[in-house]
Length: 186
Image 1 (cartoon, rainbow, N blue to C red):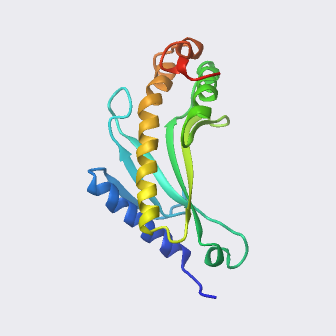
Image 2 (tube, rainbow, N blue to C red; image 1 turned 135 degrees about the horizontal axis):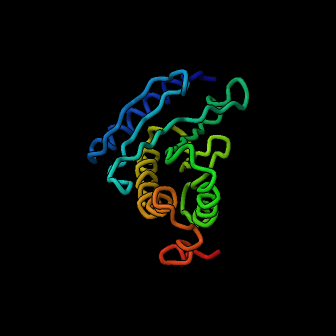
Image 3 (cartoon, rainbow, N blue to C red; image 1 turned 45 degrees about the horizontal axis):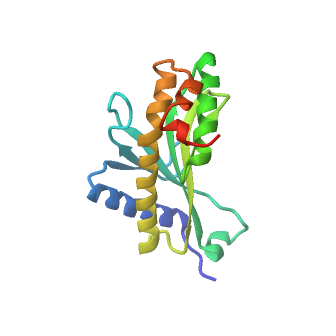
């Protein structure tokens, strides 16, 4: 049985994805493990995503798998997590509104979902992707690129509604009753 350096595989894959994004004009940064996030990660800047035309930061990290001592060697399955922190310390009065919007929108997304961490009152978007075989195989690199594009599109469509609730104080039920959100079934 051949042993592999999982950390090196993660680093190589993230560097490969960075090159693909940068070739499309998307800014990236490879980040070393830290106390806050003890894993290698790739930060991808998604430009023009909020009402102020500010970028959103998507962080890609491989989720460590542990099926036993040689799990990565035998399984050759990788989980790439993409996470975007959208808002923190949401006020108690807005939390219910944001929760209603999350509950209405997330079931209809093609990939990923919006979510809330209630303890820190944080709104996020997250997507996990399973990559079989080598994470740098051509088909997996293409899949990461395509799914990142789909995440970007979902965020473009729905992020403004979350901002309307968070920043402008709009009522989620009112937003849900108007297009395009009214076209999503309850």
